[in-house]
Image (cartoon, rainbow, N blue to C red; front, side):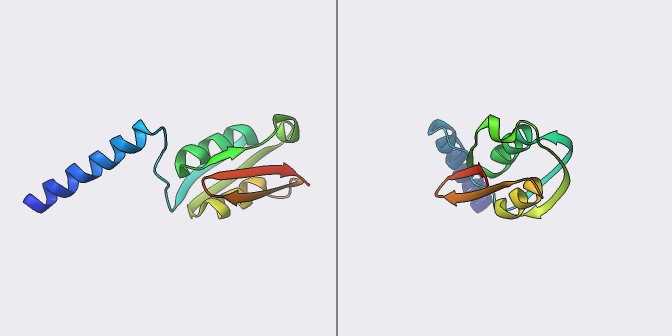
Length: 102
């Protein structure tokens, strides 16, 4: 029981520290559903679910939307599904993801 409480306290401390630093802990797997969702909204939801910061130009994506189900996917798999056949590509460097037009 003591080990459980210690683990719980350490987890809460880590989360509090991450919040104080303005960062969200990165999640390994993402589960989201989009139905005719503008790409800008989808990117924001992926940011919240993954802890990455997604950088994009609204002009590049304003006319695009997505409909897909993301289940137990990495951030790279999720972005590939969300972008689909749209003329966009992305790159990941550290905690940032850059989405650009082809």
